[in-house]
Image (cartoon, rainbow, N blue to C red):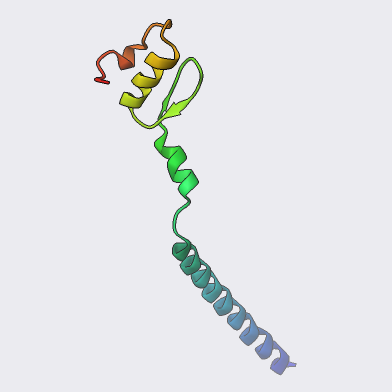
Length: 84
């Protein structure tokens, strides 16, 4: 009977080691894939038009958009000092 107990404990240790090795391998593969370009591009769009909800990456583009697409709407205060 003690022989079976010893084999179960040894296999349990192998299982833990195998899981750790697999987790390390998965992490390595994830790093090789690189970053998600869609997510990075979406994160770069930080300015949102208050009228049409279009997103833009910088205030200069935002001001140009606002002046061309919404000329009758007053300019938002955050765009007042931006050079276009």
